[in-house]
Image (cartoon, rainbow, N blue to C red; front, side, top):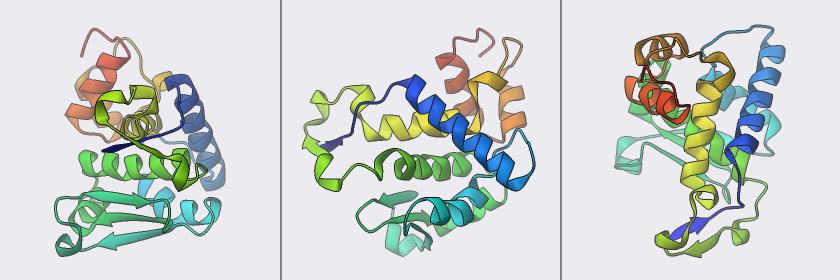
Length: 179
């Protein structure tokens, strides 16, 4: 079983990510290609999302889960090694953090009872909370407006501080040939 979220288009998710990026840049009085996702998750989320807390969980507690967002309990939990690696600039772990932030920003206004349980086969991508959170993370960390036709996997990974895999997927989804 999986959950079905309120339908969202890439355009809607992109607009939300752009707004978050703009407001964060204004609040921090800085503009940078690499979005400060850890600062956002630890400092800003608790200020803008009512009562949400950012927690670092042990490997024993979390097992194979790299990150978890509990809308009902209002927590984002990132596994300790993922947090440490994200703090050290590991692109995969920064993406994981952005994915969990996406759940908060996209799904917290949706009452937990509204997230309907359904068979995985019946969920359309635009209703899948995991697809939505991945799309949000990509839009936040690698804004379409900042990527050009001349970009490659290597330039995107370096400029935005993401993994090569995330950069490749992003360029493919944007239809950039150099991917």
